[in-house]
Length: 183
Image (cartoon, rainbow, N blue to C red; front, side, top):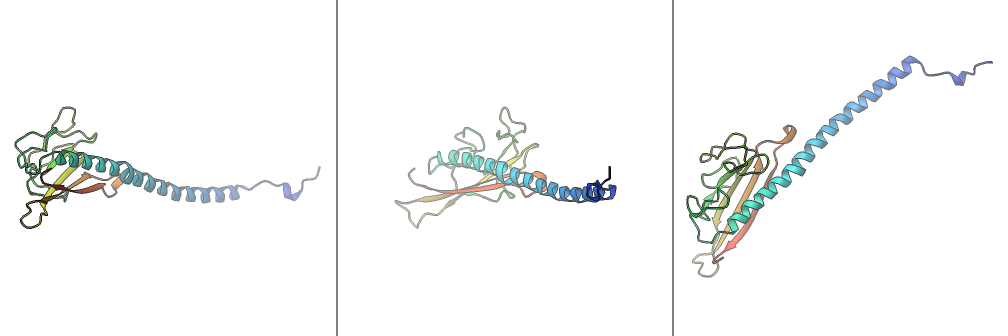
């Protein structure tokens, strides 16, 4: 039986060239997969968590009376003394926390210093070991002059992670609301 030229197999050199091309393409795809995983974790999971934790703090602050200036909102539930309540002050810059306007959460979202948390209570603005989320808030009086009927405070809460996943920028969320007197 005579072999036809068209029935010849591939040579070893052709297999090596095809393998080299395939490995090069796969290396490029794997780096894209790493970027996709990092982005999904930071902008999906962690950003959603920071928003949830900022909203939790906002709800705690909105539950206070307009004129409250002593409730400690660094603990949950808030205690009636030892804090700043809704007194004007604080900062919404997560990198420059202000005493009495900051709290820390562990990686599971537990308030540091409470039972079940993997981190101790902070001392002033010094973060405890093993913290993962930092929440800061600012209370600003934006009332018109005299404000006998329409006093307003702007409450801004920011929450951010201690670091980003995979070396990416950390996730952060910001919320702002207005609170009116007498509510």
